[in-house]
Length: 560
Image (cartoon, rainbow, N blue to C red):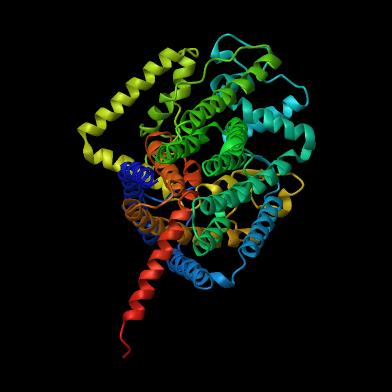
């Protein structure tokens, strides 16, 4: 018996360095982002050393000093509330806190959806998908047929699915909403988003419980996760982000629980998680990154427990879900339209875009979307090999430029990271502000002549609320990054000491993978938001650590 225990301890020790190194890297990144968040807040509308604020996300008013003071107060208030929950954890009903915060979040989302009164959103993908979904629900195929051989002559719907065949999944989901809810389909989808966003926060809370966090730490996670405003604001976005993230995270929760189960129960949880992952990837395929991150940690956990069968099982389910999520919706659309779509653009295209300075948003936003991939696809008539060649050439040129001019490389990546990870709204208020209101609601809800919802218009109550939310999200962002830095270094120390559940490293690993990939990939603030959410349990650990240090120092200080 002693021999088996010693063998298990040896195996755990073999992976301790890997887990510890990962935590140190997450801690270093979080610390840099915390400093950057503070700098960007202090610099306000004048710009910052690491990069200007994204102009279309935060139209900062001249009274930016108020934002600095407000952001600092929010950070202090959140930290104080977290420490108060820890001190009085035995008196706080965990279920009551979750129910109260979830209800407040749902009420806020309901008001936000009704106030936006969205007819459609101006974000290009969302606008096209909702238009084509509505047409398909009515049995209209005029945007898709007849089909031309040359890209330049294709109809808009056919052109879109030829460019992005992987969007067939969310197109079918949106079509289902239009068939079920008709003219209220957008609002119904927004409410589905709201429920999904709240459910995702609840999944993060349950992951904290499953990974072994005690009640005081869980209370902090509950407060932070359910008051993170950006996902709630995103509920008005008719796109697959919220639904896809919720289903993928729920799938990972089931796989996490299967790591703690055995026999038929563990297999049932693995299979159920695989089905949820399939649907989640149909809604939003990029969340494969979340699943890959979790599978890495599950592999470490399985190896530490000598449960080797779990490793190939999760990998096979991951690959199967990814393949089917891409092939099933495309096959359905091809069958309905009687056409064959080209293969997906090579993934290197998105890396090539992410390493180019010519984003459509200007020089201050390097690595953001540009027309390089679409131009290559049209020029090469969908030839994947030719597109791959173009992407490789572009990547090679970019890397060569970085190597020749390190100062330019530092400018490029600091600007790109700042625009993605240091916008406290994660584009949520920008997305709301490019939504067009329904004709019946626009006269009472906006002063914009084109009927666009203006989140910053202080002649309406929502203008003041959004400006206040900007301050709240700014302070919240700084707290999470700073707390996660402390929490990561604390967890790294614990990993060297042993006895820590490997599952607690799953969310930090997800953040690290997301940060690393999107440092190279095409940039968007909304891409960073799910990975920021994964830092919350780590931030809770860090806030508690700081609180314990302060308490011990105050207790040891002699009375005057």
